[in-house]
Image 1 (cartoon, rainbow, N blue to C red):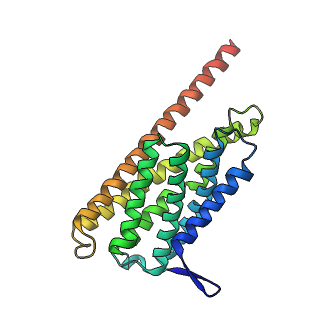
Image 2 (tube, rainbow, N blue to C red; image 1 turned 60 degrees about the vertical axis):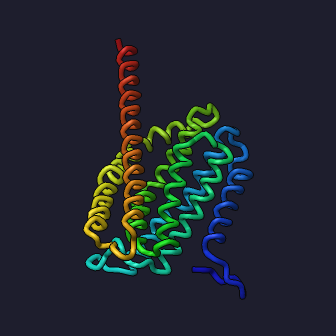
Image 3 (cartoon, helix red, strand yellow; image 1 turned 180 degrees about the vertical axis):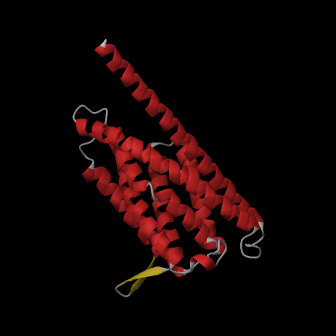
Length: 257
């Protein structure tokens, strides 16, 4: 799709990419200009994630549920124009964030690989087969529904060691348990359930003739790997949280004695 500006029709993807790039530059040069140089790039990345995550949830939900009823939902249906627009929106965000990692964190192979794999899924769904957006956007909804909470937690965590920002540490400690719980339910329960239904649908041949086997298998590998990494990540955060709480209790116990 494209957006008409005056008498000129501008394709969605370059328009969204320009938007995210401008937001990133404003964040880096203005919003976080007084933050330490080490955390300014991460904070700027969080800001574009905020502008992508929650809007993507609402846009994707509307695009999926307005085109099909729950009874007629299909993981392999043809993409609608609104679904393609949401895919363009997310592709633009991941391209911008990928550029951020390449420039500031070129050695962060995990996140660069994650973004490249995600772009592969979105781009092939959008341009190669033009089918399966209901499946991909369903996964996007589950991936981004925790985005707002995660970005607030990340920003607080980035400044919690800064003596000039005591509030950040308090916010980080306050957000950690509910964020971990929310993330665990979404990524550890709902995500795998949706993913399992998607793979089962494709394995039964429901996408035959519209999505090649090699492609849906590739999608399954990318998504399955991402879900596994997410579960391991949140599991480690829970372990770290309990260790910190246990250490604090020991210190308080020693003071009492």
